[in-house]
Image (tube, rainbow, N blue to C red; front, side):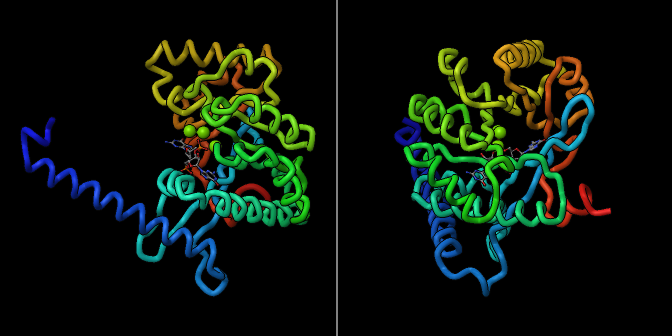
Length: 283
Ligand code: C2E
Ligand code: MG
Ligand code: MG
Ligand code: MG
C-alpha cells in the first residue's frame, strides 16, 4: 500500500532489506568459519562471560549465568541477541551449543580444581535443542566426558521453547532432573504457560522476565504479576529468580515480597573469567 502511494519507498525498503540480508549473510558465513575451521591459530573470537546471581535477602553469591560473546576483528562485538537467531535459522546452533557446553565444562572443571564454590552455573538452551528427543542423554555424555558434573549446572529453558512442545519438553526435563541437572524456566511470563503443565513441571526455578522488573516501581500491574508469580512458585515448591535488576528500589521490592534470587546490573554485568576470579575467589 505504502509502495503504491510512494515509489521512493520501494527503493528504500528494498535497500533496507538488502543490507539486512547482507549483514545476516556475513554473520552466518563468519559463524560457520569460526565454528568449523580450526580456530586455534586465530585469536579466540567466541568466549563466555559470567553474570552472578545473588541470594535474597543475604545478597550472597548464588551462582552464575554463562553468556556467549562474539568479538569479530572487523565487525566488532556481535550480541547473542543478533547471532543466536541466525544460528538457529541456519542450523549452526547445534555446533554453537556444543562449543558453549564444552567451554563451560572446561571452566567449571578448572574452578572446581581451584576450590572455587561457584554454586550452579546456568547455561541457556535453545528451543531447537529440545526438538531432539535424545537431548538429555547427549548433554549428559558431553558433560561427563569433559570431567564435569551435572550438579554443577542449571539449564535455562525459555517458557516459549517449553510450551512449543510441552509433552516432549517435560519428558526431557524429567530426564535432566533425574541426572542431577537443575532446570530454570527463562523469560517467565512472556510465553503462554499452561497451569496444567506448570503444576507438574520438573523445574526448580521460575526466572521472571526482565520486562516485569523494568517498570516495577511505577507499575502496579507489574507488581501484581510479580507478587502472584512468587506466591504461585512458592506454593508449587519452586524458587523465583528476578532478571534485569538495575535499581535499589527494584531490589527492595523483590526482597520485601520474598523473591529468592536476583540478577542484574545492580549487582554486576556479565564479567570475564579473570574478573570472576578476582572478585569472587582469589584472595
Ligand atoms: P537471557 O538468557 O534472557 O539473558 C539475559 C540477558 O539480559 C543477557 O543479555 C544479559 O546480559 C542481560 N542482562 C542481565 N542483567 C541485565 C540488566 O540489569 N539490565 C539489562 N537491560 N539487561 C541485563 P545477552 O548476554 O546479550 O543475551 C541475550 C540472549 O541471548 C539471552 O537472553 C539468551 O536467550 C541468548 N544467549 C546468550 N548466551 C547464550 C548461549 O550461550 N546459548 C544460547 N542458546 N543462548 C544464549
Ligand atoms: Mg538466560
Ligand atoms: Mg532471561
Ligand atoms: Mg530475557
